Image (cartoon, rainbow, N blue to C red):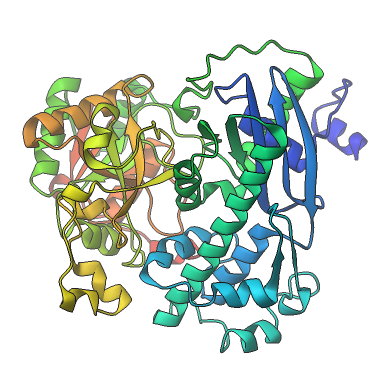
Length: 502
């Protein structure tokens, strides 16, 4: 294997290191984090044979102490329910998390009584007769289907209350496993800080509950918690633990620079693209452009926002984002159905000025990477009538929950991104402008893509996505493009056939 890698590296003759999968996850959680000392928890589907692990980090060293091995996996349990409720494996897990508040955890105890043997320390074993992922091409077995009352939901078919209850149930079980694990790790390590990575760490609902449990003084989650972050972790493990690189942290600020680590384009490069492609546009200075976009959002327009370096990780954090007015009662539906071409139940995240965050959300810490869910402040919430409470799960979607309904989920929660202006001053300036205009320091932020498509990277990607959807305005650096001014997009193939739905 090493010889084949050397050939691919054009004859590189140095030492080749192979950090383990969860070792890399742990490194990605601890080394870029803000703490000198911390407990580490990693959870995912599987890497090599490990599915969960915990340990500690200190200075420039990590030490993993305990593991759970395949086939016993919290990530794969969650993925089994993702498959069973009709969503795409290794892609649709976040949909299950978003669907969960529409249901009741009616099946949680069935899972714990039959499928999972969960111990007080968070360790567990799965009864493999309910699963098929070890030997077959599906996640679940006929015994699983019998236990939960039917065959898996067909993708894209109508969602039922049962599907929502199943989602709520596996989410509740996942939260219980995570909390039990964290309590044990706190007791075993004595550490006051916790860092997380692995795909399960992207479950921002569980992260929010872990934060509110007050087990640890501070929690930091790797923004690219999935396998992309594992590549970063492998490099950091090599630099710190193998090459003994120095590491200085202050206990507050992480080293990931807002996760704005991707490529960027200068205004000159953007202008060359627009001009060479004969795309109608206008160039503006930053302040007038921000004022124009602010006015557009205030008037119910949907804006594609392309600025600076692309984000590293699965979340758009204000550089490759689609933005809109969080006060609008119809904006969630408009963005889901007309812009993102995705299921109506899926919530949108708020980007809020850090200095105003507690005015809107029950959140006392920064959440720059959109990895914590918090409740909307009670005084902003709208109490549902008796008639509204009787509505079927999805029908509740049309009932405004607060004075920022477009970012308030059905359970009065929101997946919050706080914006402090340090790493993204332009985005902070835009939201501040909106606050000065409207009194609200919060807007909608969703990733700049359509369902099934990667987040846009280049100006070409952004323009194509803009033209394929019903966005009104595209801000490309210091250039504004209005949909009404653009020529008709002509393509030989329907873009919806290009990407497999997630």
